[in-house]
Amino acid sequence: MNLKKFSFKKRFITGVILFVPIWITLWLIWMFVKLVANVTSPFIRTLLFIFDLPESSFLITSIGFFISLSLFYLIGTVADTIFGRRVLKIFERGILKIPVINEIYLSIKKLIDFFVEYKGMQNNKVVIVEYPRQGVFAFGIATIQTKDKVGVFIPSTPNPTTGYLVFFAKQEIRYTSLSVEEALKIIVSGGIAASSKDEITRYL
Image (cartoon, rainbow, N blue to C red; front, top):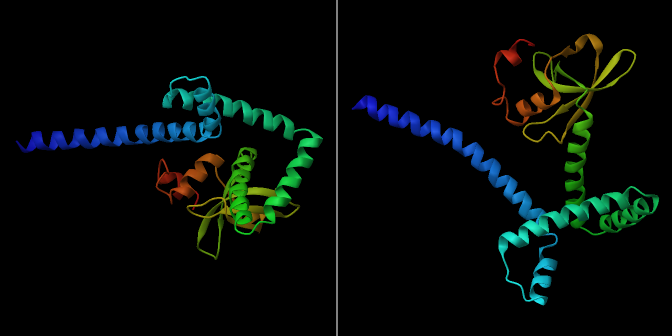
């Protein structure tokens, strides 16, 4: 009886562990689709009303998603021109003059800029350095190299968009074989996402 109870419990927990990440991933994808679709959904609802067509939530979301993607592409194309860049600068100056709104705008922009720059950091080396004091170690990303110093960006946990740029002597740097993506996963999760504890301890 106890064996059957244990088997049921084990299978149930295994099912939950396997299902929850899949469900959360699909939910996040659907939330992203809805978020993007919301940009143009009021316009689509108006068109459906004008042409006396039935409203379907799925139809509005689907059409809105693809129209929004096209709109983003168009904005990106225009922003890539000299005229577009000037318009964006004027818009940004206006936003930055509005109290509270300017703080929200800057926070979101910093977050987006981080992920854009993160793609450019893929070829950078992940290192371990003694920081903030001797005997304490931190993950970092080597970003700048001078004749005898290495500039290391040390992300904070759990928000890697903030951190410190610290310069170390070359001999103080311990290079790892980890990719930037692997290191950021470990940093954001507070070490939980490390595929193996040896993956970290072998560098210490």
